Length: 346
Image 1: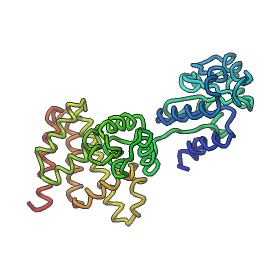
Image 2: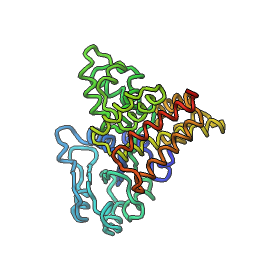
Image 3: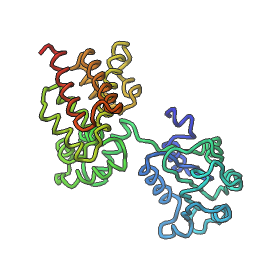
Image 4: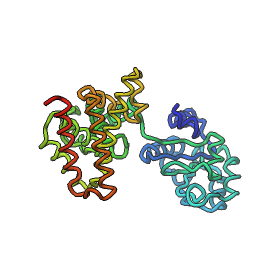
């Protein structure tokens, strides 16, 4: 269980285990940024609780209902299924007003045991509001957050398996590193990659051929190019980000973040922090932490420090109006190449 789960109800897996054990009823709030994981959970709940073909009879989807409608729907006795399922979207008491209707707040503790009431919310609930606060206090809040390392890798492999494809674990790790940890984005990438794999196997090369690169991944590549002295490659990567709609200051922020991570990693290595702690302390996926270790191994403390200072100086000069935004990245990249040469005694 993560620290978020300890503070915010129960974990996603614990919630789904209650479903599979037949112990899920009453009112629950499903929050968090992972919409796909939440919707997948709702689909499994519907398939488990509602009789096939009669879902509309014992299930209801309500959008910001008033208390009378919500309570009446929950009090309806299930007809053809063991449970009644009521799903509520866009409930005003979760988002718009600081206070929820007192009748709904009072009712969530009295939902019949034959009904499962689910409030769905994109993003984190504001626990200062009465309705989410009440549900959280009863440990009936579930956070749907991005999966981590082993779980996410297994999820990617399982999605390929659903398409009758065997995924190389290294290919799953590469996809997560290239395209990020968002399950909705990864689902789209899996569909693209699957179309290439006609022999029943997903290799790393298929992922590298078509997976959409995040800005973070491209910045990794840019720094790799700086270390290798490949000026043309670095500028082509930078231009690709610009053509994809990335703002220059946004790319600068990514470069700044990357060098800060490298500096933090060097500090942790100096302090002899166990490697298994790197990802958690840096706030990145384990796959990204492994790549950072590889980059840090090839860079001196002096190079990282000077590169970070160059990024900070460029950001300050642009934001203070001393340097035009146009051309700032090109100038920074040239400075980074110069720092690389100087710190390596070239």
